[in-house]
Image 1 (cartoon, rainbow, N blue to C red):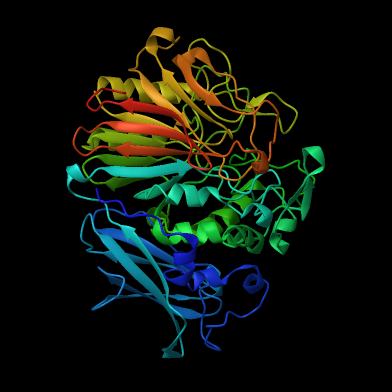
Image 2 (cartoon, rainbow, N blue to C red; image 1 turned 180 degrees about the vertical axis):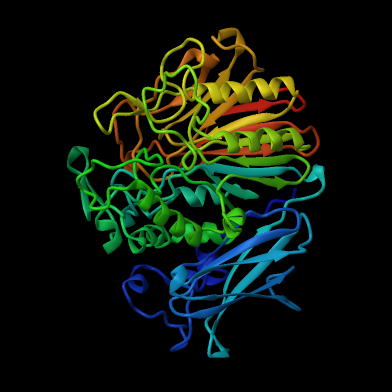
Length: 524
């Protein structure tokens, strides 16, 4: 594959991101950019593409006022003989956001696009175009695939710090020229207000860019929307969005910490205690601010399969919407589990149908790491494992069923990717070390956070026999991004051999750990 170099900050500001880069801090606070045409719609939050396949993709934008979204695509940056796509009317019902589907695209090609926002009363009056690009998935195996993944953004009080250059990790991820970015959840911290300054060890001070919506926990739809807008104040993220398409999933902090359906909050910061009400508002804002194919359909959902040519299928899970209540997780039967029965059957069916060489299971929570939920003072469990190394109990029963299915259906090339725990590690699950043995070995790779507090390593549960091959984590809780421990992962699939290489990287791109996996093996 001919991977393009990621543009430097200077070229980005000069060229394809001219419009979105205008949302520097002065613009965000109300100053008009010099190039703006008075009274015409502006797209100061940049553009982004998502759920790209061999022949399709989604393009997103937000306007500052009512506007008609128009997308033009071209094979070149000159936009000679562009193809035009008429998108939706953007208005207050979607917080002036909109997504336009592009279909019938050539496979394995660079697609240059520009978004025009037109005055709905006078289509001739358009704002400054905002440009971006993405590469469609190749239908040819030899072209290979490269992508990056991580999660957890603006958490634990650590937001956009202008003194550090903001979310710098996006520049390092973009430098690898990935085909897409898989975000494993916690895109926002709706339950994590930001203050202007935070004291750091050694007399240092962390400084946050702040907004009204980030001053308290999000409860209203407007506050959830404001949390998503907050991250788009960062220049690095906007530049990345314009050049790298995304596959997005969600986890708990898009709503509130460790939430589950039916929960009633005891947190005194909230006046709205019903989590289902909060989740409905958060889901609407989430669907407005990301280009996600399945959320556009009636009864839209987060879980989906993204086909990326003959080498790769990505199975995006939703471990929030259908889970049972957090508990001690040691019940001998558990038909609902963390996925819900319908999603589990969907996953089994889609895995068995997949003909891709590699089947990445994008799990927003880890499998064998014990993640506690002590928010109500009880020793409840937030993820799957509960620390009992014996036979599967609670939510482990659902994972055991899935692993058994993969083995007996002889499904090859499954790899688990996750984030959530705010450090990076690699676990190899081995039946020879497990209490439950009816599965084939597989790998689980953990990365993150993107820009959030880092935490010590979680303990391992021996039920599925995890062997921790690599880990990097701090020894104290909530280490700020100023002190490192921010991570992302890279997956590189070779088009010739079919080998899949995982690299765990620090925020500057330094490789910490590498694992090469061979194709064609059941499990992996």
